[in-house]
Image (cartoon, rainbow, N blue to C red; front, side, top):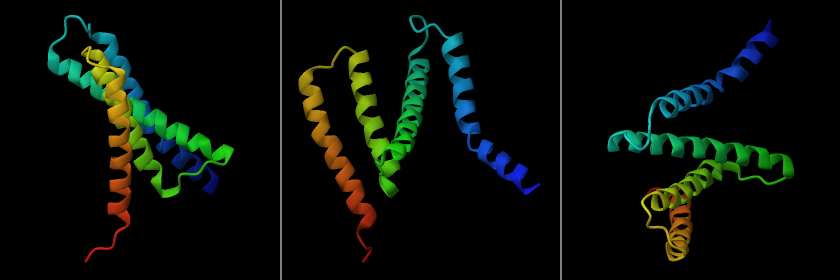
Length: 125
């Protein structure tokens, strides 16, 4: 009986992913990007970023099999990587992406990661 409860708990963690996948299918299947209102485009971009975050977290989990461990920094790395890729996608979608933008964005991403890492580890006064 204990084994069945444990197996059920393993599948409970997959519900958010299944809900996101279903929401993606409904949203992107029922909307036409050329004729939809701007707020709907923003919702679509939010869904793309959420999917991207989930994919990056999955890649980080798979990296453990190859000996790469991010430890407690996995969420932070996934958030910064999602921010960088999401920014590049947003700039590309409005036609404003240039190599110079990427060159400027990467140091800011590194600084954001270091700043959030430092703020998490520094003791409170």
